[in-house]
Length: 339
Ligand code: 5GP
Ligand code: MN
Image (cartoon, rainbow, N blue to C red; front, side, top):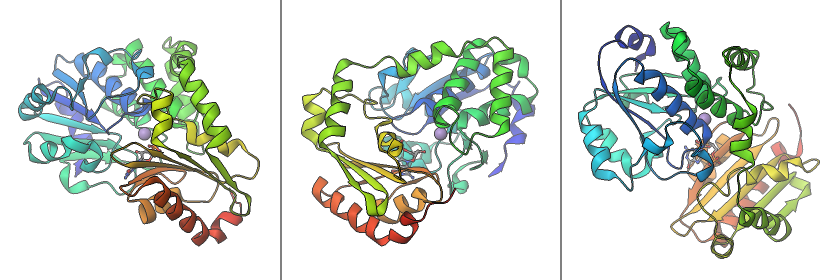
């Protein structure tokens, strides 16, 4: 993988460009791809954003979401774009497998793949160019860096700014995670200086849920959460019937894993959701407990030090058992607290 610096001098050559992200995109994946899209469009490139799967409704306010292709629903059209693309920007994921059914296609096409990502252990051999920096708060921050380094900062329009803000704000947990560096605050100041209104972005992302989702959360916290105080751990296990009962849609469970972290002493929070075809796990931690390693070792996943995920094909009860076993194996790290 060659340095992304090689791309800047070529930005003014007309290209056919695909920009893509990980499956079930979150606000960082959607914000970084659309931020880059609105930037690149200004050069006159023929560009499109492709999501490997559908996404949460609360992302639909972002400028450009209406034009985003859902690979699973619009496979033929998306494949035509992928076949013809000179450049394929791959944002907010480290391995092609994170694009689910699109992975095989991505591996076979001849366009140059360009990585912009902040996850550990990127599959560098599949990318022609790129940058991987686990020290970055978000991929949206890296898109901002990309734009500044390219020398075209005047192309940070309001659309670009809104998308970047959404990614940075959500991936830093509203500027609270340790990844929130001074540079992140400088970036936000820069966007504010350019006229960004941040309050509507928060409202669009956080105050737009259905009543069902709210009642679902109530049920989950009351009936589906177990606390293991001697391990400073909380586990939420959601059976498939809850998702049906409350009409839960893509994105409705996002952020739920963070709730137990606000209980005094809880250092590891986990959620296991029975999604039918698989059991999806999310892990969040505070301080020195490394959930990236935990997710890799026990749940075929990965992510970051304090936020990671995985999955299992086993039934829910089995995955819960496996989690408890893994928790017990990590007793020592879980019982000491350090920042
Ligand atoms: P979430 O729990 O919100 O799904 O994901 C948290 C973080 O872990 C994200 O950065 C996400 O990209 C990563 N992640 C989630 N699930 C998986 C997985 O199955 N495999 C890998 N490698 N990373 C994951
Ligand atoms: Mn991210």
